[in-house]
Image (tube, rainbow, N blue to C red; front, side, top):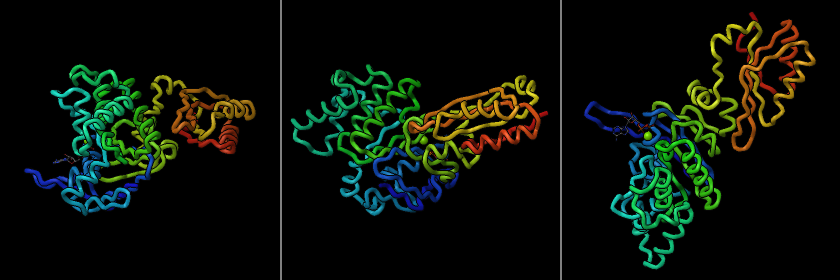
Length: 337
Ligand SMILES: Nc1ncnc2c1ncn2[C@@H]1O[C@H](COP(=O)(O)OP(=O)(O)O)[C@@H](O)[C@H]1O
Ligand SMILES: [Mg+2]
């Protein structure tokens, strides 16, 4: 478990003091994948770097598995840090060393006997699917393969925690997906707690259990990923979600709609369309779908539909009440014209 308590990080710059992280408290449970989302400059990297004391917090504490890192110095801090792996957007591989040598280099600190070190490198490369690239140089690898080397290196010393700073931001969507799957496998098979920062809500949707949203150095919302997707509170959270689930309807189409426009959300079951069909049959209203999607978040469906509903206002109200009775959340976006 990682406990961040009242953490603030300020930087002295030529232009004065800049706040990177502003009084953040967070708890990250053992074995979970925790996502931190925010726009550039929100303080995500500052917070992550404070979590392994790559950067010393200006105030506040970071405790990992009961050990207060902020109280450690020198050799004890170095030892504690070996148990926290980190990967980066730009990989930071040593270009003069082969893939195998890059991974072996991370093992140096653990001072393993040579035979064991060779065995461990093979094991790590197998884990990330790069056994055939051991003697190749980083320049000969694709972005995704480079990140796999980064991951193998980060896992070298059997960490309990893996910190990922925009680890997929330099990759194309397919490669991103394959790296996210690898991270999930590492999380499940090795029981490593993963903290992942990203500006892409899709990444969070794909693999995170819980998440926090950061703005101006602060955490403005946090919770279970499914709950946040289905009941976002902050405006910024809604904005991030709309990048995954967008309900933009072209203006001419909206202008041609004379009925009421409603947004219907179904949680947990794929029964949404059925309920809507029943509603239309029973309440003498006419429904036109303008948008519809079922997102799967942590393998749970979240159905979202935007529709025009036409008919007598009293019937429309009854129809809405009926849908709500069957578990839908209905929001009237615009009343009929
Ligand atoms: N080493 C640094 N020196 C001065 N200011 C910094 C430094 N690192 C980050 N900052 C500032 O802290 C704020 C948060 O930055 P950062 O943590 O990199 O955000 P993010 O990772 O969300 O883009 C920004 O205003 C940034 O300019
Ligand atoms: Mg950053």
